[in-house]
Length: 210
Image (cartoon, rainbow, N blue to C red):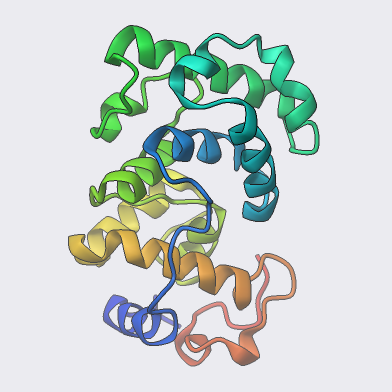
């Protein structure tokens, strides 16, 4: 089957998941940056639980910058890669103070230069904290783009480029959240639920797990 028609995908996403949004419980840009750094290989619910504990003791960039990463490890210990994440959060906070006066940059290219922040993380943060159109190509977005025939493999950069080329700029932020919802409910990595997927009839990989 040919790749999925982007117009069909866009319509189905809007019809089935119109209210999909970021599920990380962060109210400020820096809190969101911390949450996204912590979210690698972790569920949003896990990150939100950890974030709630952190917010009881640490408020703002200054507080994180003064931390020893080892002090954060007991709070993060149930997250994958918790030692690396503790170090990344502290180093990122220190770099924000030194380079940007403690403010989270709104330019994803600038944000991505900070310790612990890659392109996907930067895109997620600027999109959801500032409304800057950007593609946060997480594992769900990568998987769906591949299964739809938009990319040749599950890869963040290729998925981002595929969505940029196929979806209107004003839809990038909402579409990412809608694709994530699709990936969680239907297009799961193991045993995808094609029978309940609204895109199944046109999907080139219906019933096939790569």
